[in-house]
Every structure is written in structure tokens, then in C-alpha cells.
Image 1 (cartoon, rainbow, N blue to C red):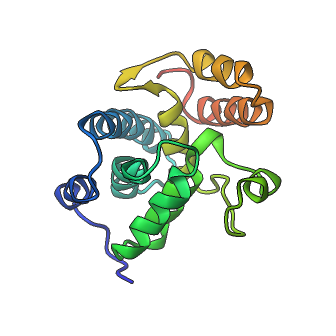
Image 2: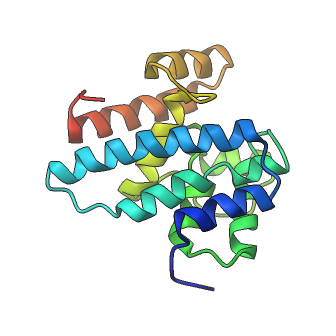
Image 3: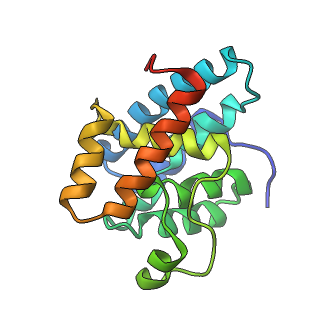
Length: 176
């Protein structure tokens, strides 16, 4: 497996080759733009952050939507990324971005392979958080995402997103 991150162009090519819809690619671009803003804000606060990893991880976070639009797109996307020989940090962003993360018991209920599906690194957290702030390709208030998860009776996910928000805003303030 390659340890080198693909370029932005190579990541976009993978989205196209995987047959992601124009809508999904537009969403991925919007998430990338916001994730990079958050990452830059973190860097300005003196945090060590891999901007390239954030960019490529955000671009590819929904590659699994080329095959399914269920929550399983995270696991499917991780498989696509593995098959493409992408480095582990990118694969981790893809599999850990949904709903602020998926707990062990939730993953078990979904029939997912035993693994960690909750964002751990700052780069993973930034992409997961940015994804919750983008609906389609438009920026939305985080409260909307939390409310939607609560309405869908996904209280655990809503709570994880609240915690993610608190952690990110604790790092960079509410400047976003």
C-alpha cells in the first residue's frame, strides 16, 4: 500500500472513476473547502495539522456513495480506498466520518467489520465536523445537523456531533 497521498486531481479522478454523482462530488468539494478553513484556523492556533491529509480525506470522504447512500457508505468507501492503494490515514477519515463516528455497538448492529469508526485524529475530527456543516453543497448551522439526528432518533450520534462541535470550537473558537 502506498504511503503517499494522492494529489487533489488524483482524488477527484478516483471520485469520477468510482462513478460518484455530480451532486456527491459537489458535496465533497464543499466539505473540503470548509475542512481546510477549519484546519487553517487550527494551524493559526499553533496546532500541528496535516493540511494535505485534510484536503484529500475530505475530498474522498464520500467515495462510498458511488455504491450506496446508506450509512454503510463509510465502510464501502474505506474498501474502495484500500483497493486504490490509498494510505491508512485517508482510509481512516473515510470510515470514521459518519455521524460524528459510529460506536462499537452501532457498528456491530450494522454488521460492520470489527474496527474503530469514531474519529480519533484531529484531521479525522475536522472532516467529520465539516461534513455535518454541509448539507448538499451548502453550509448549514451545526444545530440543524444535531436537530436532524435527534429527529431521526439518533441521539447517540447527535451527542457525538455536539462533543465534536465543542472540541473544534474549543480549539479555534466560533469563528467558523
